[in-house]
Structures are given as structure tokens and as C-alpha cells.
Length: 86
Image (cartoon, rainbow, N blue to C red; front, side, top):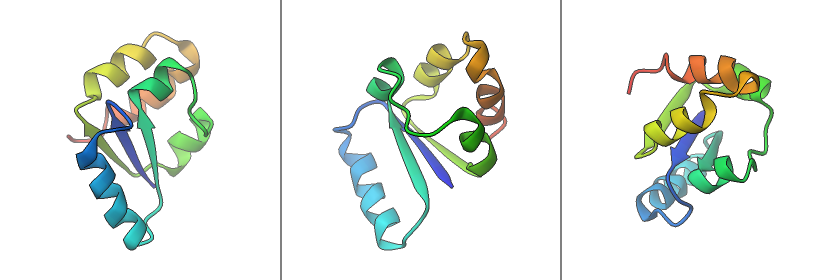
């Protein structure tokens, strides 16, 4: 699964990339900055860890690390996404 972190849901570049991903029937999940703040991530941490094989940080790596790093429940997930080359 491709995991996309974006700063905002109205980011046009990310929206265009998603159009292509839909076109090619790619398996992906987009998480926006407001999703993290509102804790609206629609999948469990373990599912993210197990299913993610590509991460795209669309101007959001610092935001994601800041929001997730300090909670024990997300520590394993943060460690995994930090291993991806960006």
C-alpha cells in the first residue's frame, strides 16, 4: 500500500497524483494534517505497519513526526515510516 501524508486535503498536487493512482487502481491511503490533529485515521496502527510498503511525504514529514512521535501507541508506526528513504 502507498501511504500518502499531505499537509491539507485541498493540496492540488496530491489530488492530481491520487487521480493517477485511482486510474491505475493502486492501493493507497491518504492522511492529511487535519486527520492527524482530529485523530481521524481510518485504519489501525498495526494495519498501517503491516500493509505499507511506500510512503510519500507531501510537505508533511515534520508534521507527521511531531504529531506521532510522542505517543506510545504510535511509536512502532513512526519508527517504520522513518525507515523509508525520502
